[in-house]
Length: 425
Image 1 (cartoon, rainbow, N blue to C red):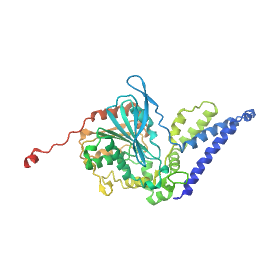
Image 2: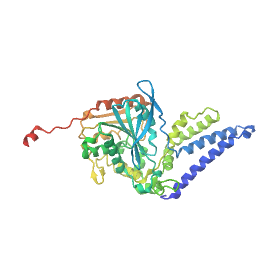
Image 3: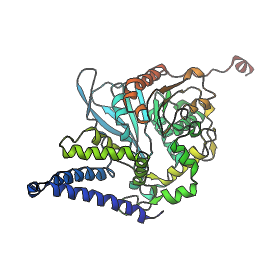
Image 4: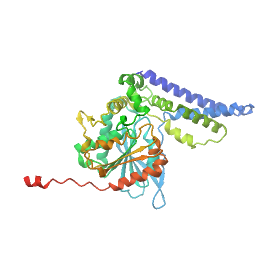
């Protein structure tokens, strides 16, 4: 499958379905069709509207859609998105709230690079903006990155995170959501070894697969049941001529989306059937619950092949992070070197992506970190999405995370040398 033909075939199928939806919608909207005494015209138009929107959203990066927030002064302050660091595979962006005094809490939100854009964390950003200066890793779609920019695997990802920490300074608090949890932990350990003064104040890991074997899910079972050769042959394709990344080896977003949907086919089928009924009855709107959710859910991005394959092999199969055996350019990264960064893990009781125990395993790796700087929380009844963007996040987890940040806002005290050592000199 590692060819442009299969990549372009999927894009052709998507284009065709979008065109069919647009055609059905236009046909059902003709005034002459209203004279035909049958409800089929209404159903045809409704089916076309839902189908066109569905397949159109698959290749469109959603907008952040955060025009302003209300400040302490009761005024609405415009939110401007500033690019602080522009790299081939990721931008470090800052949500600058105009005419507002900078907040003391400086938070770097490390968004997942697992098929969706960083905008998947929009609600998380909105909830943090009133109280924090918010920075986000805005990962780019691999299909738009020229082959000349080189490879990108989990070691490059880790080094990107470390560089962003250096850029923002040590008075920083990290929140890693899902996929980046083990790699952000590795980036922090890397800084602890190489540049201790560049380490952040705290690190909150939310629903991430630090040790996938701690509690099995369909995701971990899939990773263990296939060989790397099978993955490479069935999942990897070359970007077609339509995009700047032509020839780049990727795990296509459309292929990922088919996997996402197949996991809950019945639920998605019912959601789209119900939406067609609502459109036909005139009960749907541009920003109704269905459209808001699926506009984001259907917007998928291609992942670099090296990143996807190295994630499966090194994080899930070999468990390099869980075994404290992760390396960067052949140099071991020792998690016991983290001695001053406070670490908190958050898990959802009903999380079927990163089940409880997978993220908490990070705390067992931190043998050099005092227990007073470790914390963990399991949210009762919460699923994967809810622990960073749903009601569980807003009502319970967010206050706990902000409290954890405040508890560890002060700069860590530098270790002093024992008096016996000083006397010996």
